[in-house]
Image 1 (tube, protein in one colour):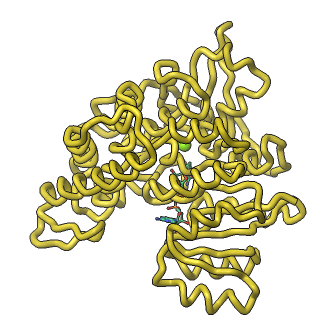
Image 2: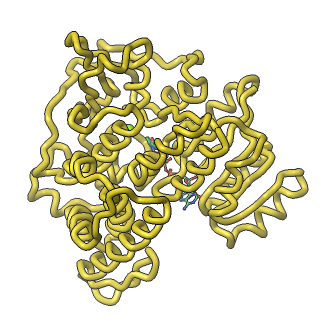
Image 3: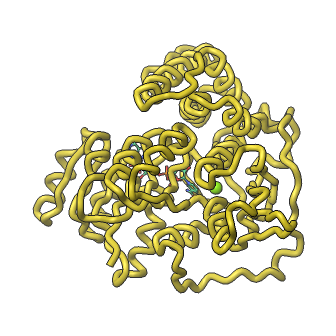
Length: 399
Ligand code: NDP
Ligand code: MG
């Protein structure tokens, strides 16, 4: 019986992880569940899965969590620190990092210190501080198993191969909902349009990142740190059908791919099983897919995709700044405070305002994340003629 903590159990990856745990009660037990603010779902999950601990990041919900779960013998806690502290408990060996954005970094570092197996969905952790994460892993018994579908595909393709024979990682991208639009048409797209992803059902933040294709830039950075492959050997290819989840090229010219339906249950269950495969009914019928297309991404339409290689070339805190500025810009776009194309503008404007730190410490990452968010919020305010208090916009006039 493998005991599992899920940080972000109420989200898209978190609920799909619980689906798999529900299907395999003989193999898995969820012992720690955490959420941001969705108190009702966290309580319902705790009542069903009976973890030892449930934590809510937003402390305003603590009283309710405590009063609902204490009679059931479930410990409760609140706040970001409580989520990070929970990573040192002895009642689980694996943690699924299914939280979104920068909030994954500190708990993941604590889990590495505690020697946990990390099923990593939260790519932003590697985007922000991949080098630091790898240094921490080097002095720990902890390992990372990718959950992101592209990285899971590469991980599956690498099985049995000599890593020195790998000449290229080829990451597929759906191209998002605006793949076929012109640059001019992108001026008019709304948050509702961007949230309508053609192939994947995901949380709101990553769905917007897919529409800008910053998600693919993040996945290039994620692959660099996960697989120890330099940026110049990692490329993205648009594949609108999302059937080929990614590929590796080997020195004899062979290309290995992993195929499957666009459904996260498979990569999650592969990570939970640490590579041992669990039975699943889902089958891919290739004859239903008459055209599997592949083509190069268009950086003029989707400039965010260039930020992955740029961040790797610059190193230091560059990717941390991009991530922080994007978290603000992505939310501002969802709140209709800025336009779709202005997400890139906010990120690049923030990049120009922060000095490089070549070898950042954890404290540097924390400070840079704070600063970049503040500068990005100021840029958003200038663009939108709205005043931002934290990330809640208050409209002064319509832009
Ligand atoms: P969701 O927004 O659906 O879920 C995020 C989860 O994290 C929720 O449980 C949320 O709680 C919790 N959370 C949000 N903010 C905080 C915070 N500040 N502190 C603590 N908990 C927080 O996201 P997804 O499941 O879509 O994505 C999760 C991660 O997985 C992301 O990094 C994403 O890039 C990655 N990923 C997702 C894929 C997908 O198919 N969804 C595919 C590949 C990668 P609450 O519900 O209370 O807000
Ligand atoms: Mg992905």
